[in-house]
Length: 198
Image (cartoon, rainbow, N blue to C red; front, side, top):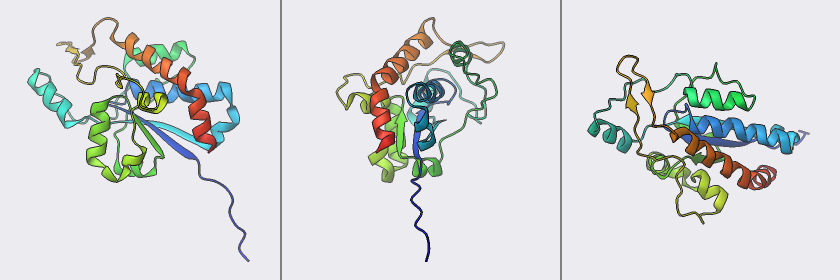
């Protein structure tokens, strides 16, 4: 007689931003760190990851603004803002390389948390069968009771350093979205704990 396997599959939480070099990576690493601080045993019940997707509307908007986004979009190092901020928190992401959102990732994820409405709508357009598990991070944390569901301006574009080709964001841009992520994770830690335990 076969023995019933009572091992429950790990919950799979996936954060999504454009390039998977800043917002989604920070959210992934800081949520993992927060769970380790609050309830380390729960880390055995969850897989937390991140990925990126460039919405068509974002690419078109960039083109209109004179910014050419050159493929491949992924396989890149994290943005320096993310590297520095996470290092301050004791997290080393220097060897991390960004990855693009795939159909398999969306199917395997139990909860997909894009950072803004443009990303959410792009994911829903591409993968309508997964609609029951796609919410912006703020929608998840605040149960839809938040007037601004974006973390960072979904259509913000950086200047381009003509010598290096690097993106140069306005002063304070990264501090604003990092503060938003931290507020969401602090407010939502109990909700994440409950979600993972159910």
